[in-house]
Image 1: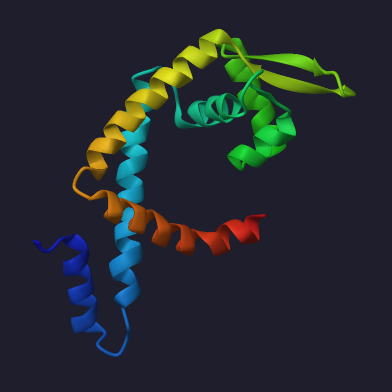
Image 2 (image 1 turned 60 degrees about the horizontal axis):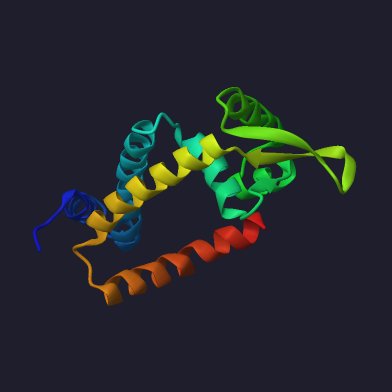
Length: 166
């Protein structure tokens, strides 16, 4: 396999700082570069459906919740890792676009539930289908076993961060 930019960077650091173990750069520099490229590609996929990434995150959290496709604002905060103030603003903006509606929470007189509208479901379903088609193409170079192994290794690396955020 041909050398990539990370190979050149690591080689330069090994030459300039031979006493340092720069091996982690071989993994995390690639993960970082891949994440930036995937964020851009996902942004493009979402934009094709008139969505920003954060809109897709909220709509997909509601869609994954199953019938009746609703969550409390607190549950949305947990699902999307943003503050409650940010979520209020996001729900307002999505409601203005007709993608979500607020309804009283029958189990909490003071609470509300955010529900996905049929329009919101249509847009998130279409965006997800296109995103997955693109991401399947990106993974086509890997065998099924390689994809499974990669997913397992990334899960192991991510686990301590998810546990700390818990």
